[in-house]
Image (cartoon, rainbow, N blue to C red; front, top):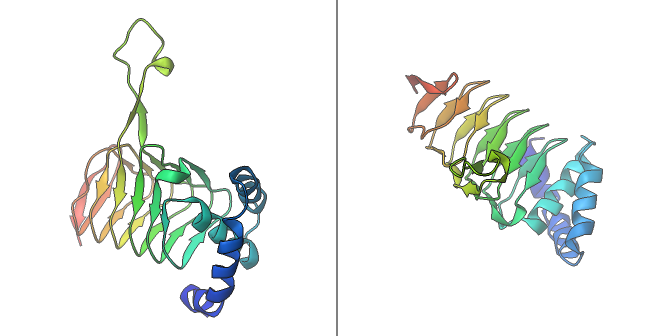
Length: 188
């Protein structure tokens, strides 16, 4: 049975639990997220989805969140339909992250929507202002394992980011990119 089939089978139950979760205070939801984050079994995956749907700006259907996924800036995260975010990923959505439909993000990947400025030399860089730039991952994108996507990046439709790449600029549609910093490897 596929993930979509399982989702459809339990959709009414998921809607019910999502409604209940929205009644809980945010600190309890964060606690539940952290508690379920270590378990890979289907009930915990479902519970993470319900918590995610209760806390982020917009959340589609059939989303799988793996273990040890960390999220910052919950209110600025938008996720479409049929998305998988695998284990040990880090999403800092403080500056905004939008993930459209049919996206797979492999394990150990990072999406950052913030960066430090270093223009004020009178104070350490870590105390300079934080610059926020939205990250957009369009539909039908595959992000390989260990990828780093930095603030302000837009990955266009039907693209692949090869494992280990560091993406610092826009990725064209129908393209495979890889390397540090990433560059176009070939067209799809």
